[in-house]
Structure formats: C-alpha cells, structure tokens
Length: 396
Image 1 (cartoon, rainbow, N blue to C red):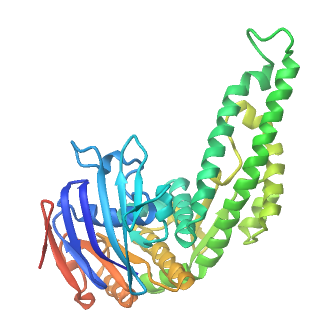
Image 2: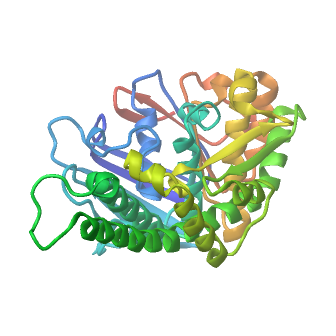
Image 3: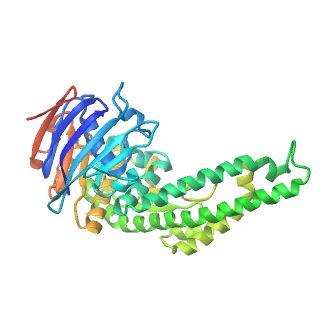
C-alpha cells in the first residue's frame, strides 16, 4: 500500500498543495514552521479521521476558509483508489471514494492505513492514560475498521449514562426535592431513576465488554512485536512490557493484569458486578467509574514502570517501539504494509539509534520522513527528497 499523490485545499497553512509520492522513502526537508508536518498530518487524518496534533477539526482549516479538502490517490495491489475528505468545522464532515459520496466519513476507514510517529507520541510514555487508550483504540480500528462503530457507540452510551447520574443525583441520594407531581412519591422517583440506571448498565456492559475484549486481544498480539522493536531500537537496553490496568473489581482486574483475556460475555458479567460494587460512589460523584474509559495501559521497562523511571532516551525509544510494533502487527495481520510516517524523529536519536531505525524500515513499502536538517536522515535510506519552504513544496 502506498500514497501516489496527495492534494490539499485550504488545509492548515496550505491554500493549495500537490505532493507526488512514490514507493520507498520520501524525505520532506525544511526548517520548523514551514509546513512539513502539515503534509504528513493530512495523510494521517485520511487514514484515521483524527489528527495527532489537535483534538478538534477547526485548526485544520486555513484561517479565513470555511472548509479544508484532503485528497489521496492510494495504490493497493496494483489498483488505485481516490479517497477524499471535506473537513467542515461545526458541521458534518463529508467523504468520497472514487468521487462517490459516502454515508459517513468512517466508511473510508481501511482504504489507507498508516502508522505515524511524531514528537507528540512521547506522551504515550509520559502522558495521561487517555493518550494510551487512544493509541490502542486507533490500532484496533486500523486493524478492523468495523470497531469504529463500537467505539462511537461506547462514547455515546457513556455520555448518556453520565448525564443520567448527574441529573438523578438529588433523586437517588435524597429523594425528589422541590415540586413533583402529586401522584409521584420520592420512593417512586428513586425507583424509576434506579431502573433507568440499570438499563444503561446493561447497554454499557454489552458495548464496553466488546471494546475491552478488543483491547485485551490486540495488546496480547502487540506484546511480542513491542519486545522485538524496543530491543532493536535500544540495542538491547531492556525489556519493554505492556500490562492492562482495568477498572473492574479487584479480582477481575488482577486476572486481566496477569494476561487473562476473558470472552466478551464473561467481561459483560464482570462489568455488571463492578457497577454494583461502585453504585453508591457513582451516585455520590455523578460520574461513571467503571469501563474502558477509566482503564490504562501500564508500560514497563523490566520491573519498573516506564512513566517516572525511564530516562528521556528510554522514553523516546519506548514510544518509537510502540509505533513500530503497531506497524509490524498491521503488516502481519493484513498481509500488506501500511504507510509509515516518521515526523521529525531522527533529530531526537543518536547516531546508533538512527542507523538501527534506518535498517528496521528499509523494507517498508512506503516511508515518509520529515526533518529540519537533511543530514539527520541516514543516507542509507535514499529515496526522493522534497524541500518545504513557506508552504511551497519543491523536489530536490
């Protein structure tokens, strides 16, 4: 799989840009702030429907424009397919495949798969659990796009359940205060609220168990790839290990942390048990305390957690190892290479790590590299080079 051509319209700093690409390595060279990352961000957005830099779409649209356009010609098994996204902040985005409009933007997921590593990914090691959860969930969707629907359903259900907990707090804790219909007692209102909560518990356990099962499976599959990638990047500096930290009740969480992967039906039952265990706390706080949205992935170097113990170099190698492991997992499962994007990576590596990384990615179908200084990129990679200056892209 590779991108043959990228076209941008009113995307970030670009009024218009054309970038012809070929298999092998492409290096985008330019000083900071010239627009290199904007180009690879667009490719990553087409692949995942999200940016690695911002959480909303508004910054993706050039100032003064109403919408941005990203268009990619993607080649897979010798066949080319055109995929296009129209980004409309404040309104629904629109997607097209081969000029045919799609019902939902997520219908294009899977046409292009990419793995992008950028300086922001250091947060995988040093940042909040939400960053690691997103990494895992994005990888699940990249492997099987149908999980995007499960992920969206879970987000919708958790928002509605949280809204119920907040709105029902006075009813559940103290009975109804203020005016109420004469025929409705405080006990009746409390019973109704608890019944509604039970209904949402059922919905959340069904969808949440599916998402949790997918996470546990993909982490199990990712682990050997991570161990190998980290060893290669760091030149054998230690063992990189993943452990899933679940918000389920203590016994279930311990089993999962030990590597057990229960079936979805069993996970649904464990979630319902855990809801009961924390019901009073949830009512008191007005927020859902159990579910995949509360979980974390613990990263370890040997026996120590990477967060707080790993040096900057070790953290950087761990984050890079995670992305290279994701690439290898997708390659193994899909039987084709995703597009590998390395955004300003080589500048952070010493000479030894640079050469080891270059050797690891030499057989990838397409690699796109950005660098402020061309000399940071090992000459062994070769390939085509473009210079980016003030939003202008020129072949070197």
